[in-house]
Image (tube, rainbow, N blue to C red):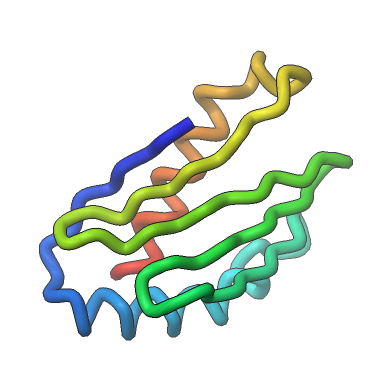
Length: 97
């Protein structure tokens, strides 16, 4: 699943916010999930989210005008695809605020 979240920040400010907020992601999961993040370069991050016995690996790309999140949803979670997309949109959007 590919989710694009628009932003209007300049590239340097978006990078700064993404790094700052990614470092806080685990704390913001409030014990509901385990979150780890790794930056592969200035504009790409790998995020792993584990909750309720599932682990989702997400690729996050900071593009010029959008934050793009790529995630493979296992077939066993197909019933929750819309809910997962909503959570990704909400939480990923907050990475740049």
